[in-house]
Image (cartoon, rainbow, N blue to C red; front, side, top):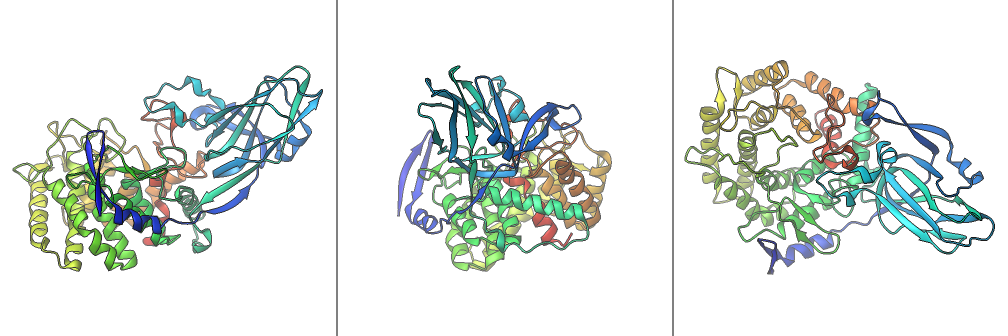
Length: 524
């Protein structure tokens, strides 16, 4: 059963049967209670990431002995990253009866920078409404304040903007109701002799846990929705840890329920009020529906779901093939037609060709399993696209794949061509070693692409190098204070933000959770 919905310029074909299946798979949220650990302040420190450090003042219990008037503030540290609801804050007047409302501002932050720098200074291109702050007028004191909105945070700052001169206020009984659909009791503890590997695994699992809500969210602070590129990586980590197969299945059906009239799957969907397909379409993300479906089947052997969703997966391949030119090469475009990585300099042609080849290999495996008539076509297209990549994108003199009219050499192009197995293993191994040695200028900017680098190294047998790269990247993030892994991290430019300011960055982000997958899947 289907109906038609128009979103902006896109006509969406809603499959109500798929929506119903997804609804039946909606998880129950697991709720726990967390309390603040310390009172802190933030101090300028050029030696730490973003230039701000959390400085412990005293245990949080000391707050009960304090009162606050106009212009006063305090910051609570809950000791670790949380996703949930701050409620039942007891606020009492101290001194004379309150003869004016309390004007209170509450700011939530995942990192110290969000406690230090005023949100009013933010001028980035992504909406400032993602910055987590609330302002209240509280007319009746004593009273209990409960905040209905869900937040993603470790730190909470309270500022008394105004109260009368006759009274001050005290605060007590802070609690956060955390929420997740990830059952931590399902995770097998990691036995490993390397303490840093164990810590990276632990932080990876915490990252995934906080992003597992009613769907696999990309980030609980921002954007708080289901993105297909993130889902693919979250699902892989989930198979090695929480094993919540139904949540992956639910998410696959949510995407399958709202393709456009061409059959293309959107890059992300909104799920809070109603299922809404976003009007963002990315070629690589659409293709990843194929690989995510294949990975799901490999983990579950759920042939019914594989068979039911295969036609839509095949359609993503057909749409991608329509982007090929007469040489079976992805047509380059000066537009955001693929994501690949957050790098404005990156040309997407060669890495997108790699993603397509990678997906074709998995589409062929699905076609064999479900006895699809498309098998011969897929095998022919795999042959064409591999030959084309070798002929038109390989620069023999440089020893690298090139991309676009400027023949750009990027990390992304080499990584994806290795994952696509365009060359035989030994030549791919030499390519990655050459990449690490020569270090082309168009580098990796996100944990998303860094995951693919590490997995490519494992694929060619460079396991020790892969482990060193993982430690140098995610381990460095831990040294910089990560209790969950971040959306963006460049060890050479630690305040990098594609949005114009790091206070808007997500510091608990789904696509950075994959070290636990890499460690456990490949016994690193």
